[in-house]
Length: 247
Ligand code: NAP
Image (tube, rainbow, N blue to C red):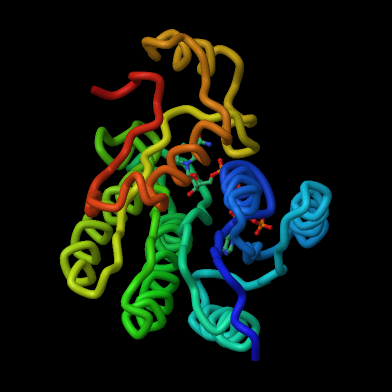
């Protein structure tokens, strides 16, 4: 098997931030694994866009919260690429409700996808990267993991957990040449934030010093910086991309 040059796996790459990160990494010469759980057509359109721009990608379907799916994804990484340079742990969902109304199922679903899923993907990548003695991992957390947020006890707990996971993994893996960082987006224009009612959206935007939402590309730029040579002495950090929303 001929080894692919530079490889990056992006979870939840069928739309939003993951899509932008995948397209951006492909433009830098990475062959990108486009992971998604359910929306195959959207994921295929990301592959087509990468191809249109002259890049290379591979669909890697799988639910990150399911350990057998994660094992299958890394089996295909090993078979198709032989190594992995970058993991972007981006897949995430919301199931919002006030604390006293939150159903245990919604708590579990968000923790399983946003935190356990990221852990399973991180663990799988670490095994390969430790053998290679190099690699970069970027976990997409959120500013609400730093501040908390009304109606998001499950989501904020998962995102805070990702920060602890990032710092721990950074300490454990630094000696093997692996850097682990997190990006904490603020309020970004994606399908996740589209459902927010206009009035609440306006209130949130007015609380941002830069007075506008961020784009998925703003977050992708931060991911690409953290995996670049320019960030070669940066590990265990949380880089906020939030227009000054939290400081
Ligand atoms: P989005 O538009 O809803 O996209 C979410 C992506 O995750 C989709 O590609 C979805 O793919 C995938 N996904 C969901 N569950 C999955 C699973 N179990 N296994 C694999 N893939 C799964 O969300 P986004 O706004 O781009 O958010 C991306 C990340 O940024 C999330 O972790 C989110 O928490 C974080 N973030 C977003 C914002 C924001 O303002 N948008 C702010 C802070 C942090 P399928 O639907 O095809 O499964």
